[in-house]
Amino acid sequence: MLVKYLAPAVLAIGAASAQSATSTCTVSGGTTTVNSQADATGLANCKTVKGSVVVTKDVAGDFQISGPLIITGDLKIEDNSKINSIGSETLEQIGGEFKISKTTQLNSISMPKLTQVNKLTWQSIGNPAEMGITQLNKVDEVTISDTKLRSIDAINVTSISSMNLDNNQFITKYEPAIKEIKKELNIHANGLDMEVSFPNLIWALNVAVSDVSKISFPSLEIVNGSARFDDNKFDSFSFPNLTSTTNGDISFVGNENMQNLTFPKLTKIGGGLLIANNTALEEISDFPLLETVVGAIKLRGNFTEVKFPKLQSVRGAFDLASTNDVTESCKTLEKLAPSKQGGNGKIEGTFDCESNNEEANEDTSGKTGSGQGTKGGSGSDKDSDDKDSGAAGLSVNVGLFLAAAGVLAQLLL
Ligand SMILES: *[C@@H]1O[C@H](CO)[C@@H](O)[C@H](O)[C@H]1NC(C)=O
Ligand SMILES: *[C@@H]1O[C@H](CO)[C@@H](O)[C@H](O)[C@H]1NC(C)=O
Ligand SMILES: *[C@@H]1O[C@H](CO)[C@@H](O)[C@H](O)[C@H]1NC(C)=O
Ligand SMILES: *[C@@H]1O[C@H](CO)[C@@H](O)[C@H](O)[C@H]1NC(C)=O
Ligand SMILES: *[C@@H]1O[C@H](CO)[C@@H](O)[C@H](O)[C@H]1NC(C)=O
Ligand SMILES: *[C@@H]1O[C@H](CO)[C@@H](O)[C@H](O)[C@H]1NC(C)=O
Image (cartoon, rainbow, N blue to C red):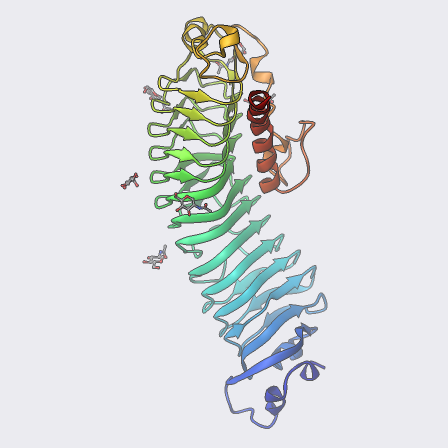
């Protein structure tokens, strides 16, 4: 019985059925379990449900949870193969997590009043093509994974902690108004030719984007952690306003069409720089202001020219190998090599610069696990782990940072 989980306020349901939702119902034990539509109807007089609502695998067909405006805890529907639709005409806020996961027969979600959710997690939710939410203007963490949604434009926020979007085969465009990403942005393996644009984004802690054909970050100034772009299809990449990464790597691996890579304002990389196996990229010549790299620089590709005209300090190694002739570039860069290699020591780690190495594109290490999580095709790396992309991103940092730490250790001796 549902009623016995609720505080006295709700015991009046039967007596005052004409009354519309006015009460606060405290769910004892913090969670109420809903086994049927009738259980949910028992919540109709609760304006606020204080606690969480868990819909079990026994709930079948069309499910409505109308009455409540606020659920202070979570609303969860998991491992349910019988539910066809979920709706609420009244719900405005979910204070905890709105989780729908492994609902194989779900065809529709309809919550036109819902505007605030703390954490939205939708994974393997069946066949809804629309979100069924008009406008979510407050949400802190979003994970939308393995769905048939066509658009997530209803998520319209200016600040978010994390946005994880992967394996949604029909999402081909995403252009949110987000200004800050406080933890991470992960976009992988969505619709073919997906186009991504963040016209207002100013700073992000970590960014990892794969499998997109167009990308734009016109106003991004700071990446506090790392920025990582693997296996994309765009033909050029620019961070026109990025000045630094505070504390992490920049990496581009396996972007096979990328001809140009442009960082006109970048002065400092707080971690390492990895550019590998982007076979259409022949020149690394658009880092005009880059002065400081706190980790290592590792470059592998079909380069004919590589230049960093303002480079003042690389604390890790500088390691370049090209399938083409880069002799002229190597001569210029060699001047920055450590003094024991005859240079001026601006590069503190070992300096290597090699032309005509046919296997240059085969070394993409530093790419640990490639962070795609559910995406196949990678994971050949022995350092790879099966953790989520955030963790994989971190292990890249560690890899490139170690180079710098090794040098520091030498200096301290
Ligand atoms: C997003 O929200 C802002 C106000 O917060 C509104 O001006 C804008 O039109 C919304 N965008 C979309 C696509 O709904
Ligand atoms: C680029 O950054 C500067 C501040 O450094 C800012 O004034 C400018 O509006 C930014 N440009 C874009 C396109 O956002
Ligand atoms: C990231 O950098 C921006 C710009 O300097 C700053 O406003 C923001 O607080 C930083 N965020 C974190 C999480 O350090
Ligand atoms: C790359 O840059 C060159 C020279 O600036 C330009 O001619 C070419 O169109 C660019 N290619 C792409 C795909 O943007
Ligand atoms: C890159 O170099 C490899 C090895 O020389 C070559 O097989 C490949 O065709 C080159 N790719 C492009 C796009 O130039
Ligand atoms: C390099 O990229 C090509 C696609 O351009 C891919 O087929 C190949 O497996 C990649 N090599 C490595 C070592 O990642």
